[in-house]
Image 1 (cartoon, rainbow, N blue to C red):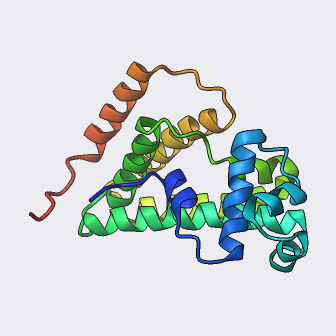
Image 2: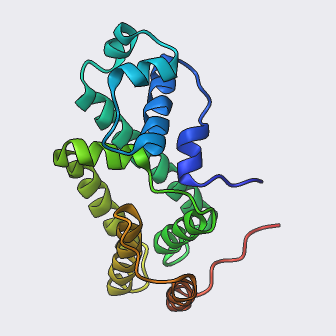
Length: 196
């Protein structure tokens, strides 16, 4: 089974309708032109819809950006749930899933989610759903953890790495990243064997 990164899943989702095309176009424009440079006219043109069609689905630019944040969080959450299910409820399953997803993103050399950056650049209030998601994620990690403090530690380490990527302020090199991941995995214990 081929695994797509979370960013690829957002971009490669089947295009079922105008709403999905608009979101994909906004994400692509944010990636290509920079997160702060999304214009509704450009999004409509790239999505192949009229500006009126865009405004039907997203009455304001703020609503479009909010939908980008929601889409990213939902896609990430789906990937996390898929990984957790593979563990069969083993201890540290959520923390291990979070680490695995973040490592895949790093290995795929995917840029940070531009739609998320665009939304945050436009309106810092869009951090509220991200904060809620992160709190729920941490609570899930703690609930499945062999040691709740270890879950917090894993969350903070991975969150720090992700924040450095989002803000383009990364300070660790690939070797240091690999060393940190190896240590986290050692602390979390072995992953359960997957059925053949």
